[in-house]
Length: 503
Image (cartoon, rainbow, N blue to C red; front, top):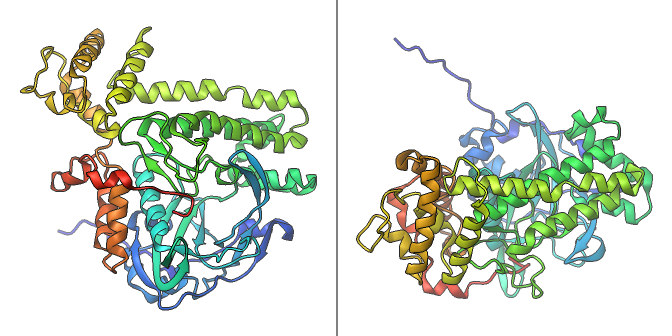
């Protein structure tokens, strides 16, 4: 007997109903405009998991309405498209007015969890905030953002999502002519730290208050009961940012452009440009070729997160009311970051208790990794295979794959003895620890060379590698033995890969 319910099919894109809560703000916050159509759009890739968040069926991807709407060629139901204005500090320097120079917000739709998600088309044409730009995004950068948004979500790191990439043969000039694309981004809100800075530095306290009230009522309603809701807002954003920085560091992710206009008021990873995942471990690694001074190097990200929170605090100061109250809201950043990172690193090492000398064990581990330029992802993944009682690790042991990552293997052996002793202190069981570590340390991350390979295929109209890579990255903790080559050390040719602000 059939005892399964016949669920109704989820709606196609044409059935979504848009509103635009951001459009309820005063007219100075945005410019209403339609996306600029692109010729002959085609689907590059679409995320079924992201679509689920707004109740879309995978069959929607086969619908021409889906492609035309997400290309910006067709209006969405009840949509009020707009580009938002904001400002920001770029590489530590006040840059003045910025804004959505190539992104157009369609509006927000109901989400499956009962909330709402905004849909934004990145690469949808010029806006009043384009600053002499063409308003387009190239296929290369669109694929990178699409893949990394979905990969970060699968890693459990707060992020904007990417619904689809729509391509076109239309060309845009970067270092050379490149084909263009539109990526559909989703988030509860795209409000940034720089959104607040804009009104503060333009001395418009009424607009600043309107934005803060919009964010609190829409996304932090629990703060309305606080004695000082604006101070509570800064404290909560500081907490989320501190935790986000710890999550980035723990997985080896580098954002590349941590300007205040790229920092989410919701603590999400936002605006994927010249990002990278750590390979050969170097805490000073700079993933953005444009960042000549190393402001956004891997080991600088935590303190830049703190700096950016101070920039937000400066902008909120007129609402909070005093320097002392503002500083109090910011004061817990370092402790919050340190505690979260400590929690994550203990999990990465399979440690369930905290001991007095754990910092020394961790410091020694990272020093060894740096000295041998050990691959970050492979090290932590293979560490889960280490056995507590195999104290005489040699090339024939189960630890060989881990040990072989090090140039100075004797130094690794000495550290491994300390690590084993630490595991014995809490009676760690190999099989249970491996399960926990494999659920924490991904086997698959979006390495630059993997993205580049997928991009090169896509530039020849072969999107199979983009879609395959997406499926692998949606399950980063699974073994996936059929895809083991995607977890290997990068090939020699990948050493020359560079990404910049045009990426």
